[in-house]
Image 1 (cartoon, helix red, strand yellow):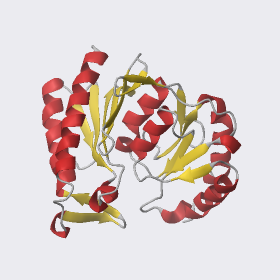
Image 2 (image 1 turned 120 degrees about the vertical axis):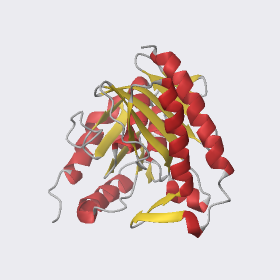
Image 3 (image 1 turned 90 degrees about the horizontal axis):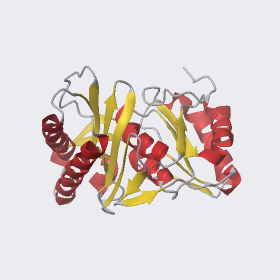
Image 4 (image 1 turned 30 degrees about the vertical axis):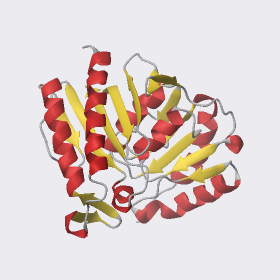
Length: 268
């Protein structure tokens, strides 16, 4: 398998899809916005973008299956699986606010081997493949080398549901508000991970995520020299619905502080 060649093809798919999404920015009305849950929306653009992506990826790797946010395909692959978030940041998109990203990853068995995150407002394509460096628009990127949480700029995301962990989460925010350079919330986990990968942020954590939110960004982060884990420091961040991601030098301290709050037993 030529991962580099495949990644180059996926970049084209992501950017073409981003152009389609950008063209739809001012054409979304309340008639084609649907609610999946409290503060969790899907538009006709999400669905159309996903169908476009799946059609293109099927041609690239016919034997692969799909895990896609909007469920446009449930095809199962024996060895390869595409993981797709066609429009990460739907609430941002509805309001015309950045960031909005297309996120595409390829799993070979359980290993992420290709990852592409394309942020449409800034026209920034972050990407990596197994064994590569990490890149932003042809330029190599690396994580920061911040050593202490006290000197870090931290990103997070707010839950749309599963508010049983909101109390320890808010306590963690208070801790990081007062013990770092600040906390940012963009509304796109894929973009957050890409920003850690290129050093704009030093760390990111969030709970109640899905595999399509993190798969592509996690590979880009890894190839940029960063570390991702779940809140217990284990590798099951793809399907555990939680992630801690940071530059290598401060990961142990950041993980310890996130875990101190977020590993508490959730309220019923």
